[in-house]
Amino acid sequence: MKGILLDIEGTTTPISFVYDVLFPFARAHVKEHLGKDDVRALRLEHKQDVGNGLLPPAWSKEPVDYVHWLMDQDRKSTPLKNLQGKIWLEGYKNGELHGEVYADVPRALARWQQEGIDMRIYSSGSILAQRLLFSSTKDGDLTAFLSGYFDTTTGPKTELESYLSIAEAFGLEASEIVFISDITRELDAARSARMQTALCIRPGNHPQSPGTHRTILSFDEIR
Image 1: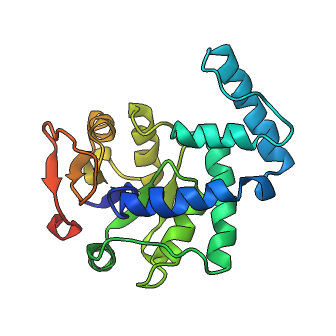
Image 2: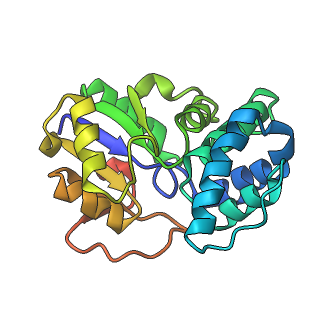
């Protein structure tokens, strides 16, 4: 094991933090953060949704309702994730938001760093949002332990090609990297790229069938 790739939601960070803190905060501040680039990118996505018969809310110059609709769908949309990242940046800056990780995460990151392991993050949240979360935890700034971040611009987390691209970015053989996630379908895709895998089981996570993947309750088990 020379590299570790970590999911965030349900793996490093409680699902409740994402759904009960981050998402409501973003939802409440959409209108004031919508910029021209956001609207342009969202307009393209809205047209695609209409063309696909998904019945999104009617388009408006300030598409707050459409953004809320995307959030309700839990859409892994790059324009949505970029907008959320901007909103959360303001929240972290003014002290309304602080990143949250499980207690075992900081000590595991420190141990893996001592062992010379390259640690990176792969989440559907934007790279900005990832950096903000890990830089503002009660245990301090954890970004010093992390050497890279991947988001929806790399590709879907359930597709083989995403993990091949990530392994190339690591500069390692895929088989030398362990991917830890709470979603079996993501682990399946990583396994198909020849990565090692571990299904992370945390309180409040959605039940998953592990299949042939190793299961862990804590990062302390990854050695």
